[in-house]
Length: 444
Picture 1 (cartoon, helix red, strand yellow):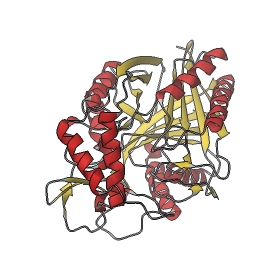
Picture 2 (picture 1 turned 180 degrees about the horizontal axis):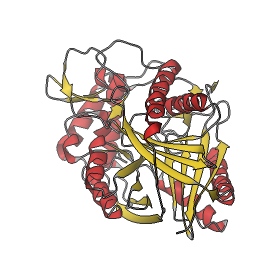
Picture 3 (picture 1 turned 90 degrees about the vertical axis):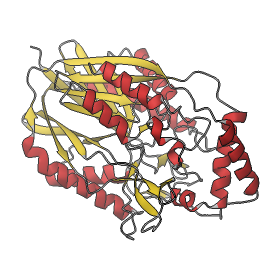
Picture 4 (picture 1 turned 180 degrees about the vertical axis):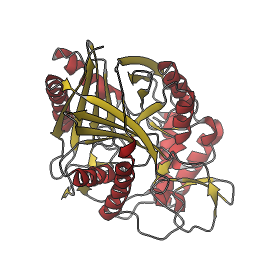
């Protein structure tokens, strides 16, 4: 049996002062950094089989950007082309890497990102050396909440506000499972990979940050007493965030990112004693493509959107204030107008080209598999994949190999909640089922 090998490289991808930050509806120009953003490249090899993961402290990027990464990687002659999983942590305090809410991608930044991606992957490949792989899993159920609530009027609201008396019950549950991988070389841990379901949006404002995954990494490094890299792979979290509606505590700040990061770090550190060494490791990769159609607006939805727009056409958001999901729940007129315009564009200016996306699997023996989901999937999608997977430890890489937006199950559409509100790019209500089917095909 061939020796298992591991290589690692990391690049600073913090944007320049003044860069527009992605993740909210309004413009937010970077005034500095709470902490630096990183690109982390991990490469694995046994014999002639290899695979890689690149994780970015970024909100998202599209499948077309992934294709550009791959093209440059092929041109460099790397054997990792077609065998690399690219994914984002989904921080909402990083630069624009895609067109969203009327904001354009920072093309100069993207060009630099492509070069750093290929450089890091090639550097990590050159640093391959004998290693050992360990794995375990743990749970945390106190830091994440299902953010969609069924109100007393029967409608669904996202982030309806703290202590809102109109809340009846949450629409669904959370995913508390946290798979953990550890790589060791010379009997020394050299990387941790953790898979956590939670939204990476605790800070807001105009300062760059890796959010709670960055804070978690610092806390783990403090415990290890050296700078062990911690790669956070975000699990399905499209309907999950950190807001506890049963308390009035302020949960939007850098301090909140540190609280959550420290909480996850403590849970992970406490579970490391359970790590089990993986023997005689084989690496397998597989890729599949699938079509992700766009949502079609019904006649009734179109008429309702036009009426809402007409009723709120003169509304504007106050200058200098973030446009938040709480504004959506409160029905702020400028927000109603914004979403009505998006719905109208579904009918009047639809995207006509086919949207073809990729999913990639990386497996270690028949014990561990990582599979990508190019979206912000709801947790129910992740649950279905884990339930049907033959691999005891299945790691779900949301925002992996691209990002087509929020994807739920069919029953999540049509009753409210801004994740499933119509827009030109929103996926059809059956794309979640196709994503599950494709993941399970890869995980056979």
